Image (cartoon, rainbow, N blue to C red; front, side, top):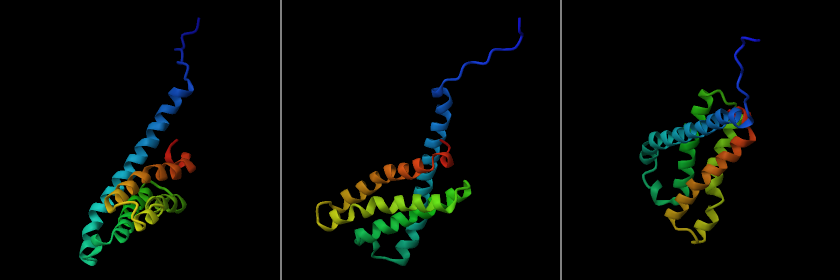
Length: 138
């Protein structure tokens, strides 16, 4: 009779949960870094470009820049390479760029444009992350 403790049988779901959790936490970290970028850099833009908030197109692109900077800094700290950072930054802009024609045509109000742009960012980020699953801990 063996005195070795039995190792519990690990199913695919028990193996995957921690990696899915790491993936989700990484996404949350990036969202927080994006918010930090917006909060820290918005006053700089307000000082440098006093009328910025009167131009929704410019405001959205500057906001995407602020979010990209915050996220890029965090991604570098986490050891991500430049291609991953470039893809994730593109996700920030893409979510607004696809909606700009609707804003310009008057189909979307300024507020609806900003909300939709931010909502679309999450799936755009997920696509970029899924392209590099292993890099993001999945």
